[in-house]
Image (cartoon, rainbow, N blue to C red; front, side, top):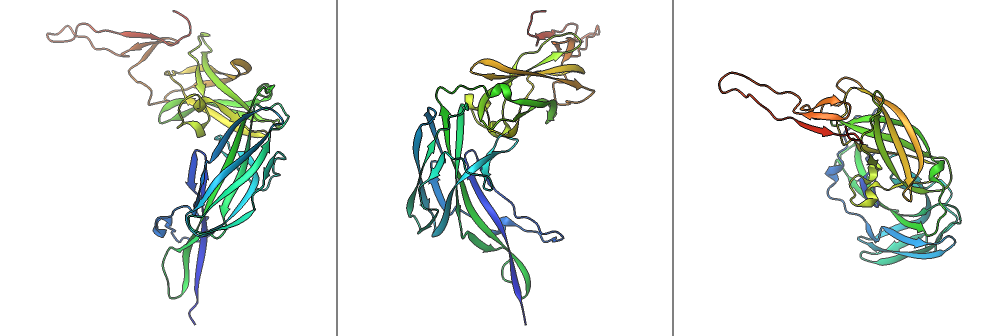
Length: 351
């Protein structure tokens, strides 16, 4: 008797605002078989939804209706449910299916819908703005096709086990609410447990971790500067942003948003060279153009920490740079007898 087994892996095509990725299949311990998801051919989502995000402005206690338009691209069955949200360290917001749904979110559409190809349905519901101090809230609706699309990766085999992939389309829809007249006050309760210098492609990077111990969400801007411990000289201020917004443009690129009971990090390349020495990394959290919280972290630069920064610079005194860092002069015929040196002041004060 010939027995043929097909072992299926599930690949979820997750579509969230600013994020689209396929989660790779999980390997079975001890299984050395190579799975080539690309061999399954071109996959397209089972349905599409517009918009992915609704953005509202409203006062506390306001009831806001919403609707999303779902169009099936193939015959499918979809599950629709309200979900809580969880935030990763990069700032990305994802569904938390095992957590309680926020009491202000209601989905009035059916929980499971059967659709034919190109058939349309509306996902409807309401959000009620909470009465807390948060300046913004985000609510989530998770939409996922039940059956998925199964593909045999290795093709039919006479016996033994072959591999298959099941593609599942999943959308996380969001309703973001900016609260008018919010009292705020959450930023000053945030905690900054750690700040450090990192390295990216040989250049210096400032990185700060932020924790929100409260249940309330908040927005802020993070401003950063370095102070030379030996001289007290401070370098120009620059802004830090969440990694998930690095590819955005405009003011929202540098706007920090942290959910309640979450931990994120903000970071940015340091816009000036750093030389060997001890520094203070000074971080200000700003809300409504007012500094609400300041934290200082001791950091050091040792040896060749950042090899890609401009080698053709020399630090004359802390914060004052000369370029080029080396020159060659000669009294021989045809030799270079003079050279120009450019001085730059990276300090906040005149020298």
